[in-house]
Length: 346
Image (cartoon, rainbow, N blue to C red; front, top):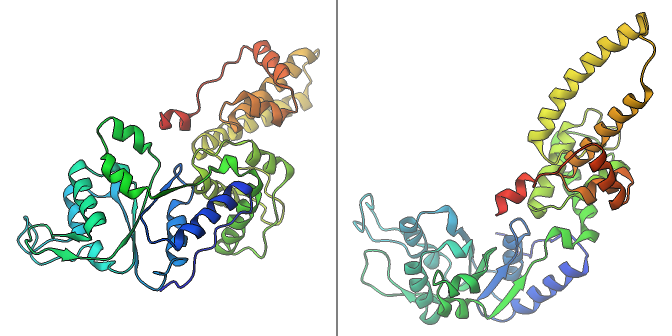
């Protein structure tokens, strides 16, 4: 069994404030609500709160409410008696019983039905419940830590979440900062994930990131936060062809990168044929103006792709001011579209 709080990487003021908040709450035996975007480390924060609390040597149990159907979630949380429903051939002990004396972490709390919310409220208030299909009232002593990326007060106003449950859960609320708010921690986290990936790949050491790669990391918005950063860094190391030189390219979107790689390979074969024919018999004269225009457009499109169509970030990669970038977009009749990840978030 783990006996100490997990190490959370980063030294930014925003993260330090959240960790200090968790440390102070750990000693107070009350329910706590952790809020933050997906991938910000809410589960790690819950573990840290448990292992800094007086319950550190008791059970820490976690369950994702969105990953289990309502009927099964009720059984998982409160248990069931044999014959309670079709397929219930024997008694099942739920998470509350298994966690008696410890801490239960409920992730994605906003997805829980109103009926289960009512049953959860009773456990918080009185420490008692019945198994599904049972009549015996059971008593437990469990500290509840819940997490969500939803706006629970708004859901409560709409009648989709119980206000009384929200009041009981939110003795205090810990807000975890998004990765884009922790610029000071970005490189440290990227290094951490890179070193771990190097061990998995069997590399002798991590060669570091090139300046261009660091710029790519800094320019990205990171809507998936730390989870996305981990995937991106590991993918970029896996895709590199020379493990002894600094990582040159950060593969943020594997779908567009695959298409771009295929197109690049095709372009190279065409360019090789063109180069070969030019070497054999140069087709003079050439339009230097057209060649420069094509090159300029190519780099503009590459920068926009690397930044998921965000013009201000693409301008930084190209060393341009925002006004220069806008003028370049108009010159080449380019328009940007919303990034795929932003569409998914809506």
